[in-house]
Length: 117
Image (cartoon, rainbow, N blue to C red; front, side, top):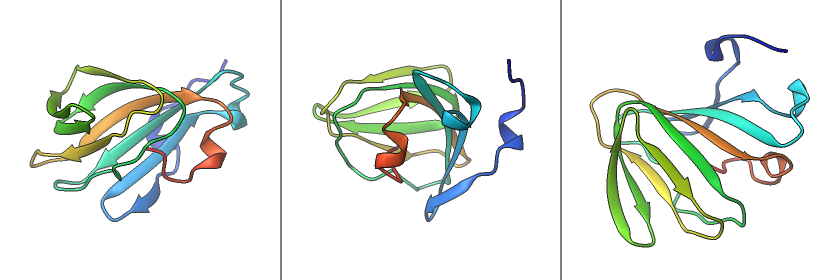
């Protein structure tokens, strides 16, 4: 068992205003999933992108727009998002503070894409 605070994991800046922490993954021996914490500065967004794996997302702090195949939807703290495989998506911080979310993806894909938000 591993217990630690997410802030004890070094944040990596993926692009201006977007940071990622891999809090559970290969290094911790996780066989099935990778858990990541992302932080977006006000106005920052993840790329509008697509990939063949699903995401499970839990909003920890802030408000954002989720851009997807069916347009933009607003999300806020406490909301969950399921992004199925092959759905183009992006998250855009619409608040005045940090937008923070947890994202789960299958193991093996993290090393294939450096910025798979």
